Length: 201
Figure 1 (cartoon, one colour):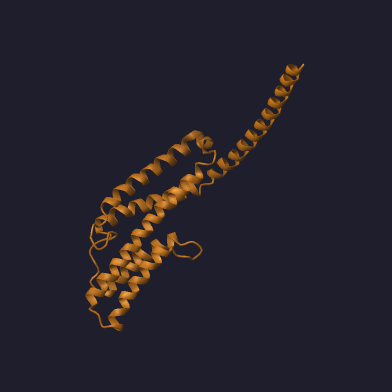
Figure 2: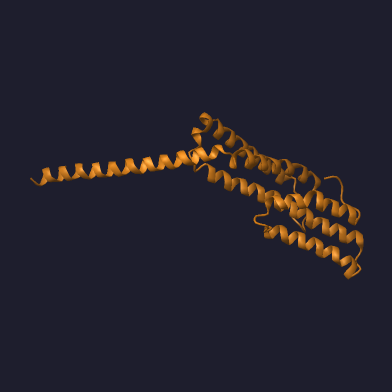
């Protein structure tokens, strides 16, 4: 992200080239996350003031750009949160059997990399006293690779056809455990019954 927009053309270029593709990636059933929607709405509210209240164009662009940057920051964090949820879901499956354990090793390695880089990216977020969520150019440069890793995680692991095998085996494993537990319960009851009969005699 190189430099701040100086006119409406460059502001809308940032919106179409950066913001719009990013928020499309976190929209579910055409529903935009509330925090992102709030920031984008606030940005366009500032833009309208140029004509509605004859506010200074430079100031309007600066404020609108600030909100659009914060919408991007929200999107990056939503993506990381989604990866955490996907990882938690996947590790409930019997994934250790996929590719002789390689699948799970690579999954955990990528997840750890996302966590580490996300933590590093947070350090570069602006520390403005009036707005703790300002996204500096350095922060954007640090966050965007994290976003790309999140997309990779989703494509290569969460939506992998291999994960279905882990789900099926996991279900079979659970059913087998239930059967074994059931038989063990019956067997224990029989032993207890025999012992009790011997005692009372």
